[in-house]
Amino acid sequence: MIHFEPSILLLPVTVRCGDGDTFKARHVIFTGSLGVLKARPSFFDPPLSTKKRQAIEKAGFGSTCKIFLQFERPFWEELEPPTDGFQTLWLNRQTESAVVEDSNVPWYRSALGLDAIRTHKNTLVLWLAGPRAAEVDGLSDEQIKQDVVELLRKFAVSSSIPKPVRVMR
Image (spheres, rainbow, N blue to C red):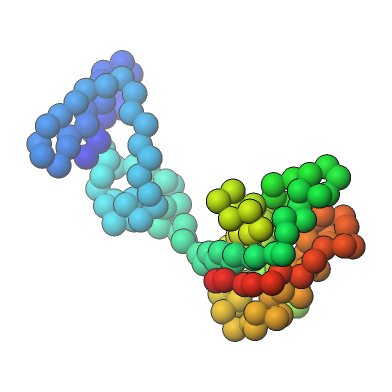
């Protein structure tokens, strides 16, 4: 539990541990997960403001997905300039929003990026997040390979992107 006295600006914050030990500090950096905050709304004394508690309650976890893509060779090292990954940002031209929830656009528009895996030289990992991430489970490996080539051609600005030889989800 973290206890603070908001009326006294310089009074230390008290942190009470699970074993009963307490520590006083002028500053505390709390890095608990959203799950911890949702499970223990009484973690702070006095409680967080209504606005902050409502924000925690409304925040969701969402879907995430990683797809490992193995290639014959690390073609990204041959690009000009060479790279170790691609980060993606798609804008909706009508709304200027980066949020992709429209089911009429391809699933890979939810891709956050592709990063090289240093321990597996010929492999990229594609990160997906949001409501479209679960859609990948219903796609064939062949469809994923085709879509990834299209995605990489857009962001690598190259038409000579090879097709992955293996897909791992």
